[in-house]
Image 1 (cartoon, rainbow, N blue to C red):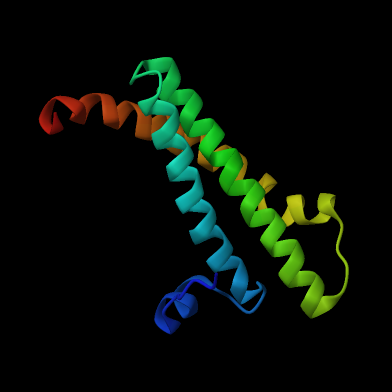
Image 2 (image 1 turned 30 degrees about the horizontal axis):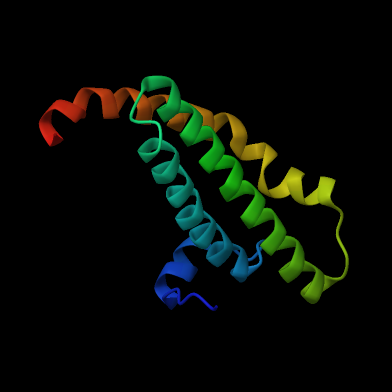
Length: 117
């Protein structure tokens, strides 16, 4: 399945130092992570602990999908690359910012829940 990403979106997100298909992998990885988060919250309910765990597991799913896709695309274009190298490029620099976003999203969702439900 090939995802369609508009040329303007690619130009906005992809610099000359990245592989263009990496953007598509993260977008598709995000969709899978959202599905995982939704399923985890629907099954046991919207308890605080489950919401945080579902966000973390969803992030891991997004990282895994994006890393695998990046390795495949990069290897086709430039030759083999190791997992540790790809993690250093695509995952490790984003762990702390993503944890901060999870904390902010959790806090914001708690505040806005009363207006949505």
